[in-house]
Amino acid sequence: MAKKKTVEQLRGVVNMGREAEESMEEGIHISVYVDPTCSRWLALAVRDALVPERDAVVDALPLTQSPAVLGTDVGIIVAGHSEDAIRGAIRSFVAVRQHVIVVAESSLDIPDTPLPAKLEQFAASAVASEKGPLLERFANALIDSTEKDVSCAANFAFCRDVATARLVSKVAARNALMSVADFIPGANMLLTMNQVNLGFDIAATYGHGLSIGRIPEIITIIAAGIVYRDAARLITRFVPALGILIRVGMAYGGTLVTGRMLSSHFTETLPASSPGEGLEDSSMAVAKA
Image (tube, rainbow, N blue to C red; front, top):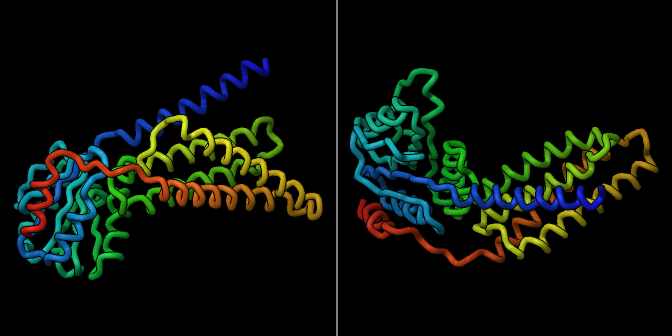
């Protein structure tokens, strides 16, 4: 019975790795529409950020009032002062329930575009007058606009901090909630599996798929989980009245620490980038804007 259970757990771990790898390999198509009146630094910032490290498709096209939106996961409008064209492009996307992000250096460059309440969720913006804040807001908007957050991060380095922070925060909250049920048989194993799954997801955001190289990382995650739980039990012996709070805090904080440790590890072991096909023309198109 114990052997069968171990085999099932191993199979579950492998399936987690496969699912993370599938998320990493999920295709993503982004269309960038460049307003010819936009600032050059803005166009260059978007161009440099959207050179994929894997096989995402990124098209760069001149802005028109009615862009081709079908087949695109997310539309990006690099805004200048062409109000009518920007407004028309936004409406073209949201009319077919496709997400669109307007990237601008000032909110004044984003024209007021009244939309039905049920369609407002499909329009977003990223506004800043400096590259650093702009890319952070752009990353948040891009990940909010697609369910392919792991694929986004695997392809576009500027999305990784945001994507991994969200993954870690979500799993930390889940583990904190589950730690309340510490008395349920198997609860500790579920907490550990959540962290292992998180490890695979973070690896995928950095372009690492399922391989033998994941074994040391899995062992580290499991060992860290054991340390966190043992520490929680030890502290609880001294202050039993705070047992639940200690378990919740340790589960949440431990997951955060593990996630940050994994992010630092994968940052140091990034695979060589391999830009997708056809990006040279797209990059040139943005650069000329």
